[in-house]
Image (cartoon, rainbow, N blue to C red):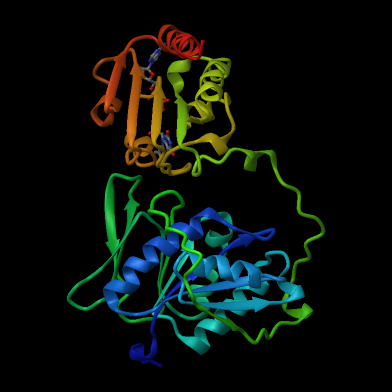
Length: 336
Ligand code: FAD
């Protein structure tokens, strides 16, 4: 049976939270969602699930949501795919948003396809750009395709909501304003223990979560040009000095020199820091896809024709083992 598309209204953001904290991508989704909602002329709303989460709803409002639909239940204390899918699916069927945005986080990537198939709509995963078609007010969702060599723009003309997961670190963050007013609407949670096939016994924070590339203002990344795992210790010293974190190319990760959580690029994290220093990284398209919108890019490479120099604001042709110690020493002198 065809859906009556005109019944679907407003832009929704999934306000993902973990242990009582809104995840950073939600603030980016609210920033982007605001632009989309204004262009269509509709409201920006959020859906927030968990236990005792009403306080977080206020925070979501301060980032621009006009309405926050809250599902508060003991059974939603920890994320489970079954519970979250059911509650969000019920809310979509009942309230009918026209656009639904989720972060392309582990949770978002798990949840979005299930919800989209339950509500029988399309999903564009891992979007890097969203825009409203001025003609018909539908959303155009752009994402890298075929190994990042082309960008595909996808539409969802016949079903609702139009759903996208959005890569963390790509969209501009919404600006917080605590004077903003919004409506908090409690959802009627129809959930029983029998609906949830898994049981969370314990939540263990992995060491990996310690580094957050998406939130970093300064990233010093190393590639295969480092030649050995120890090269990352040198980068780490420089990162500490600058108050930054260490990133890596996939080749360095594949070499086993550093954990995948540091990987920048198409199959790693997309970053947008104030300063990105690429050390011994050639600048393959899949790496550039994850860092080229950084504010200032400095590349250090001994090959003057390396493609990384095409996106760099400042290039240093030289051996990293000469350049990095010089830089670190220079910074030490500045402090003295
Ligand atoms: P190389 O390309 O080998 O470059 C090493 C560079 O170091 C060279 O430019 C060399 O001149 C320089 N160099 C060597 N020694 C020194 C020295 N002593 N001093 C200074 N410079 C030196 N890659 C990613 O990074 N992230 C991704 O998310 C990612 N996803 C991918 C997804 C797919 C589907 C595919 C097919 C590939 C993906 N890749 C990704 C891999 C990507 O194509 C490249 O292979 C990878 O980025 C290369 O890493 P690199 O620049 O460190 O190594």
